[in-house]
Length: 111
Length: 117
Image (cartoon, rainbow over all chains, first blue to last red; front, top):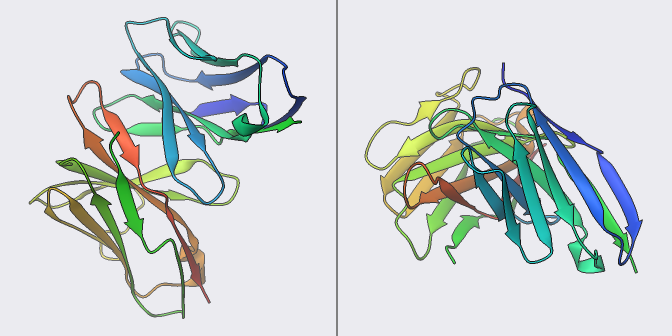
């Protein structure tokens, strides 16, 4: 059974701090991995997509890495801002169309 | 960017009634749409995959007769929760896939919070 785990479940940091969110998955035979942001009462916004052949992707202050052999991905957020406060979800695609989501990391960036 | 509109955003209904949730892709054609359910403090769980013009494919443990999915056009999919019960109270999110299959970019709606009394 494919499982996706995110640690920590919640994180509170002061503004300006760099931080790392972790995602681990049990089966390394993935197609791709995506990081999403979910704001309260809103849908998901895709942040970064890493295909199975890639090791990392970058977008602005965000950097996501993928290590299939160890079943891990990290999302690095540089110079965090209060607007980054949200729940961050990691989703792994194993089979065609099937995403398995982690339970998320709730991030609070304090001004 | 691609926009997926979901309606309603919040619905309260009495036990035993049916509720319909709409999912529309506003500026792209979604040949495949997905329905997810999210219980409090839990992961999103895929309920079913629907392809335009064909029957939906349900995940194991999801009752197809209870959660009716219709994907009548390339821009509209509906989920009907029939004879809803309090245990069906959850956050339901749809998504539409745009682009190449292997890239599998899914665009998500804002979700519908269902509360069954």
